[in-house]
Length: 188
Ligand SMILES: [Fe+2]
Ligand SMILES: [Fe+2]
View 1: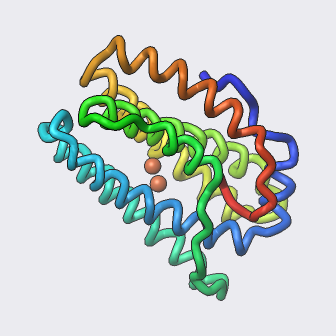
View 2: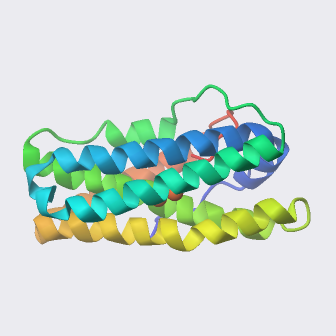
């Protein structure tokens, strides 16, 4: 689906700063939970409020799991950094209730899709170095993949043609943004 691969330096960079990446991951799950709740403001999604709540609960559970890992490893929960990738996607969300809902859902779908992909890389790439963390990332892959699919289907459910056209635009934008160098120890 994606039109550009995650850059080759991503995994080594993450492996070199695992504690900081785990703090970033905790914030990522926290933001994923609040994002699911924020989507409930769109009138086109009023009848999906139960599904969005379920995603928010799942993300909050992921947040708790990452916090548990931080605690176990003696890593203090710290400051969040804005992700240039996520900010870059969100900057192109159009105004107007329906367009905004579709764009917002597609941005969320791409972030979830990239998380799913990167968690698979971590599950494989951390096996030697940190088997516990490798297993942890492996255990999150299915859930983030489901979030990707749910958000994409929700966007299509609002307006299939519009969602397809905007997904084409967002896949190009994702391909541009994923190549941008980000020196900070972050997942996205
Ligand atoms: Fe999650
Ligand atoms: Fe998710």
